[in-house]
Length: 112
Ligand code: HEC
Image (cartoon, rainbow, N blue to C red; front, side, top):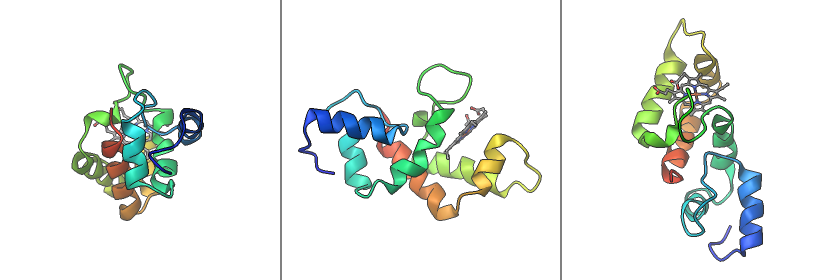
């Protein structure tokens, strides 16, 4: 993905990615996403999160408020809790530590 893509293509990518990525700024988050995630793998992983974690004012936290280190620590706490039964515990167990790092870095890098 190049930073030179046309607006229509950029919009298509924006729709396709549907991650925690902001689609608002033409030279903002997407260029960050392309720079850190040229293959789109991190965007796919992180797109799961945005189904529940919507930016701005829902009961579920906006993940863009966290640093990548904080996100990673929170996810690892869920992953490693022996008796955790919430949705996040179950989800976190499904990711490797490397995937959790990838997701955390992607969310930080694409935060508005
Ligand atoms: C099925 C809905 C759902 C999905 C999908 C989901 N979460 Fe969550 N998440 C929650 C709920 C509910 C909570 C608990 C309420 C809260 O802390 O916001 C939570 C809490 C969290 C927290 C702790 C927030 C805090 O304020 O301490 C983190 C970090 C988190 N989720 C990260 C993620 C990441 C990363 C993904 C994608 C891999 C993800 N979540 C996907 C529902 C979801």
